[in-house]
Length: 291
Image (cartoon, rainbow, N blue to C red):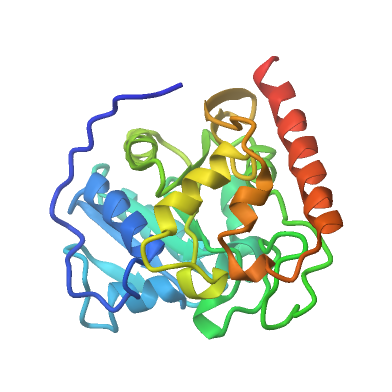
């Protein structure tokens, strides 16, 4: 366990942005960019994040932000990082802040290629498990049986395990995080800031509207995702060294599902099926911590 990290925020992310009240992504962006500091260049594709950061030339962040195309975030970040290096600038950090649609799906080709080349930037995916900015359609991050506008009976395929896919690229650093554990999130961003090569941080960011949550429920649901084993928090260095930060406490997954309207169509047998899937994934992940 990694506890007691002191969050040292610089005033980079500002109030007055266009996020929904209680938005988990806005909270995550606060800890991410304030931890990175003003000597940072952001790359943002079309997403809720682009709306939060502001329409160009306006921005809610006191650092340069380049709004790129949906499929080209990693390629854009690689180009900016290489240009900085060519100018002799080895101190400005480049960070992508993208959603799951622009990471798991549309932007994955560029991300995988950048990982293969071990480009020198941080990639943060704010994972709200769907295309929430365009009406809550499903992405490959959407969990099994979750309701979306394009899967009204529940998604029939499991969520893509992107953290493990990125770890398989053997990049220097992969981590999972969530706004329910802000000290853990800030510590991982600070760690990535000091590393060379590609760092990938996957941040679970519940969408209040898309998941059907109360305005103040984001952090609570984020913590339940961890405590049930749905979304464990861990780190992988060089694709091999696993460190568990926070994981399952044996809390029934039904407690997590019951707070979300996107699961209200489930019957008891389906809830038990999801519990079995979560248990299997947690046991599979634990084997990596014992090696």
